[in-house]
Image (cartoon, rainbow, N blue to C red; front, side, top):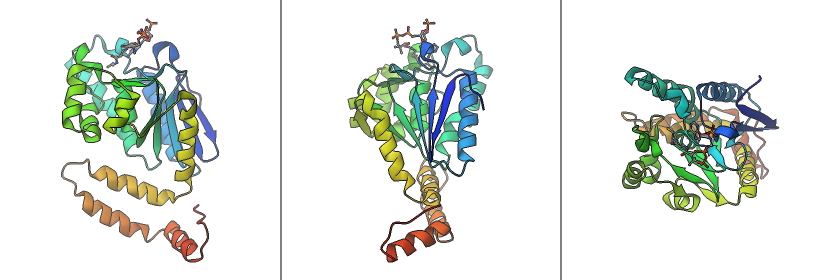
Length: 258
Ligand code: COA
């Protein structure tokens, strides 16, 4: 498939998606969101892909937010639709993928950019990265899940402060907050993500999918995450990966998951 705003590269089990609007600091316009949705959907359907790394092009920005020029004249109805559609197509969509998605935050991750990184399963940042939710400085609030995912990741008090002040935090601060897992020099960002992806790829993809479902259940009101875990745990016993994993252990060899 041809894309205008993203670059999709596949290397064996690993897919790289690079958001590629560097002149606009990779801001998310409607077309980019649609392309990202299609790319994630196709990769999820490709049984060979075990991990996806999402990053921004060049060295300044991961994503500097939703494209402000596209919604500057919106009214209440259009604003609600923008948020609902974006969450359905991209933010909630990524969070609920069975294929692990790592955000490689290579620069500014602001507004919808930080919300996109937070929708990924975990985050790694380069030292130059800056993160924030500046929406209240525009008379808005985060609309792509930021008011929900940020407090879950860093706690309510820090999330309140970040959202109310609209301040940007450094990569080191983000690591202290638990928002990103690692901080490395920019040239080490992709190699570190590749190393993590390799480690993930050695494990059972069906078990990883079950783990994602169970961990995400913790975020859903009215859903008992312990029940989901019991259900997913039981299902694992019916998989080929379970047979291979336990057999390999007993035979003192490495498992070879399909
Ligand atoms: N939407 C649309 N365009 C954006 C954008 C966004 N979220 N973020 C950056 N851009 C565009 C700028 O308008 C500029 O385009 P131009 O060259 O055609 O004028 C280009 O990207 C470069 O940005 P610029 O502001 O000149 O870079 P800078 O280094 O001076 O500042 C930022 C970098 C990230 C601090 C600044 O771009 C910024 O504050 N962006 C908006 C962040 C934001 O509020 N995001 C939340 C949106 S809900």
